[in-house]
Length: 372
Length: 180
Image (cartoon, each protein chain N blue to C red):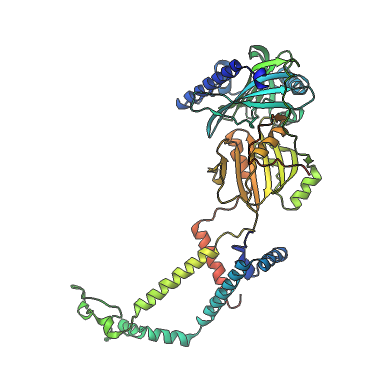
């Protein structure tokens, strides 16, 4: 089925593109360049520039908002089949993946990561289950984006050889946070670049092939799963907090809790809390218990002075346990945002040797006290 | 089964509140090893208490000092009959070293400073070890959980508006959780 929709030539082309992009990113990193990796020409120059503190709120802002609202609607209503390339620059190096996407109007997009071959040693390809990096917009995310950023229409451009309208997203401090290329005819997002506050590109997602309409959806594979049905509303979250569950209302960086659900597993109840600022998304999974002494598939890591485990295959997955809960974070966010969120959440206190001895002596002294 | 671990000492010290204490006692009723550990810790605590009381016994202290030959030490510091209570060889060039002759310890037959120093060292080492063991972080007993990260990534994708295509099942895959 996949072979009928995605020809070997197309996969080979995608692999070459991914390899070249990843190799370029590694070369840029080795050169110690402060420029945004992969940012060439106009995009790279703009990322290094600072917009004036007072962002223009005139026609460009109104046009930007209108276009993004149309893009969020198009993500729900336009039928398409396409292939996207997703590249990340994180603390674990560069990762890239190629993903096929099918979408029928009114339903959730279906994604499948394509296995690719690349000669670049820096290319860590996504696993078949990993559909991260899909350019998606929803009214909910757009609302959060409007709260945390300034959206502005930048001008015309092209993406995937299609005419596009470019919308930029700016932080309050005047730094560029993201740039979207929206298809001029359908308003579907064709390309997205995300930047950290140092104007360094953290991710780039782009269609390398897009077929609008239902003609390519005949062989659409079935969906694998449904989202957890146990949606948690405000009252349920309050009840969880009363029962001792650590359910933060927000995470650093303007990330607000926008979705919460619960599922029952053989190992107990798992709570999924999703936070976003409109651009980055962090899902936090909570479960009562503690991590085992050895954790296969994870490597110990220190993040802002906190001891955590990062997934071997994906440095955006982090876990640790503290105060009787296991925290697992799945992030689609810049490293700095992830680190700030990790440091804000509960951790067991670090106890050095002398603190431990002091506590022990206090306890022994209390035992030796005949009046104790 | 998860044992009480460091919470045993808290139980013995009666520092657990109602629910925690009930859980701990319930565990003790089922767990022979924890019961044995509780007994051992209670004996240790009783002995530590007894040690505290004994320390105030001046008569016993005097007897111990006498046995260790510390009376000689007192005269050495102030009187003309001072004699080193430790075994020593001659120390050429040192004033009075001619009196520190080899074999003096054997002559007295009393270990003196060696016994006292050794006892103190053993006591300190024992106390240090006990303090280190007792000073560990006390965590409530909790089940060991390995994060089902594949399931979590799937849920994360679904929340973000993307449904991954079902991968071919692998033996040993964890079952996806079901909503309540």
